[in-house]
Image 1 (cartoon, helix red, strand yellow):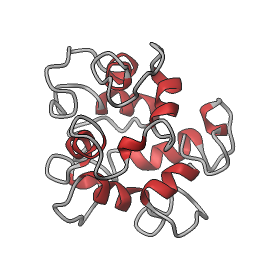
Image 2: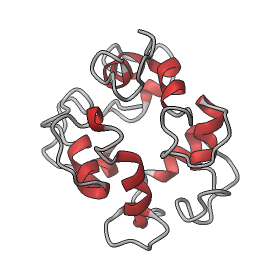
Image 3: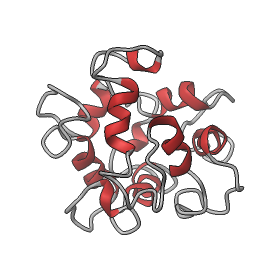
Image 4: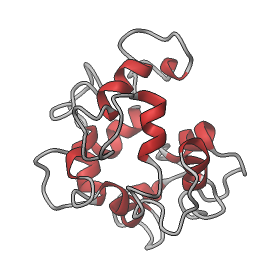
Length: 176
């Protein structure tokens, strides 16, 4: 998912610097223990599944069902509960919809000063340092676009986008 060379790592057996191994660095309980408290040493898809569970992260998906993993991720990015996140999107969810979500063209609301139902406010709930302080260690209390900018910058998180340009925030997401 996070390989700078297109999205080869979505496919199994991708290059050793992307896909599962890079995702491992991001979501492993070692570096990000507070993201998934009391999680097992497992990483990648299994840990990501725990990450989106409503139990430890209720504020990510308020009033969500007890389902986690792909099903909950599907609910997060589906146009039904979050229509303004992906306006006029297809009923498809998961990877395809996630791909659309980070495109700057159909999702200009990811940019600051967006409408009150999209972009900054929704991202703010997800990436605030209060419930997820270890996502961006030593981060400021700022949320939304500013915190997202810090997350994807190559300086604090070089392993997320190896050899990336100094660009951050929306520009870096656009490149990804």
